[in-house]
Image (cartoon, rainbow, N blue to C red):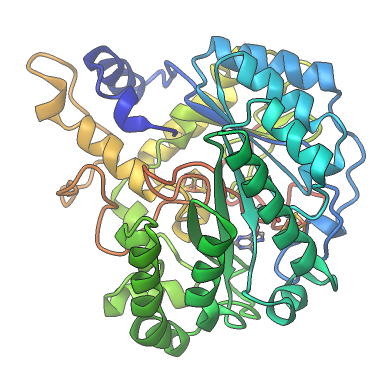
Length: 428
Ligand SMILES: C[S@@+](CC[C@H](N)C(=O)[O-])C[C@H]1O[C@@H](n2cnc3c(N)ncnc32)[C@H](O)[C@@H]1O
Ligand code: SF4
Ligand code: SF4
């Protein structure tokens, strides 16, 4: 869902996408992809389950490179590498370099703890476009207690300084973004984290409300916490953002929204805050998510909510993306969005932009109109194509805004090791 504005500025692309929204639900391009190249991790984050998983069956370098070639052939312009901790794989720089050599923007999401001087240079040599580094507090006490490993703060901040220094020395345009998971234990520190990010030489901070099971609320902010956040934390963090020149897009300042209804839903972990009751997520048409063993899912949030749609060790990218499984799920999305999507805020801004671009006025006379079998009469269009659909909505970690798109984009696995309970269609 990368740079959808740019993609949909082409009327032919708009028409092709509009056509594909209706049966037989094929899709013209894969705009961006995410590879979880490993599930292994060296940290023990309290809000994440990757480190508890045992998934040794990883695709080889050449298998991933072949898939990258095929993604490029399908129109992919951006690929994210993540994990687990992607830098545990020795070939991570070769993979970034391969993606970059194909003309794709290559992004790495990492906790940064394993980056040293040589590896920082390799990262830049690979032609990496952006790096998202995770920091959940402005000091060791806050960060390390959430990351479960003493010394993590020290190692991550050291890596960020190093990367920023090497970037500047080499005159590189590498983007360094900070992902901060907002939990009830650290949300009051967001302004300090933002300050620190600027001091470390980063490009932006992406606040990511913690994702956890609806029935547990170990980390999630309560409604009272969110009110406190909106009254006392967000305005100061916004001031810092302005002062240091970071994006002041509303969804980065008010990640939980602002209305009473927003607060209620966000406190329940329903971060889409009702958006998908009336709107479509276009991820099944534009995005591919691939796990370490080649299994393909819609996105990281939906991993384990369906059977895999295919496997890139045995099938090509095109076979999977235009296959029966993907087409079925697209049809299902057109009828009703699955419940997992109501907890997801990953691509809210991009979805609003796409919907606006596909509105009849933007498709042109005579072109096929959007006639979904699930169209809601109440569907409204955002006023600002570059903004989130309503004040305070943010796009997902991977593409939090058009300006900060990319990076973070991941959520933790819901059910370690398994495909779990299917909330929507279970595919063969
Ligand atoms: C799964 S991690 C993988 C990359 C790397 N290990 C790291 O920590 O940056 C990807 C991103 O998801 C974030 N994340 C992990 N668990 C989360 C959760 N429960 N809710 C929201 N974001 C989460 C991490 O902080 C990180 O920015
Ligand atoms: S958030 Fe990243 S560093 Fe933490 S356990 Fe998950 S994968 Fe590892
Ligand atoms: S979980 Fe989120 S990104 Fe994935 S399909 Fe649903 S709304 Fe889209």
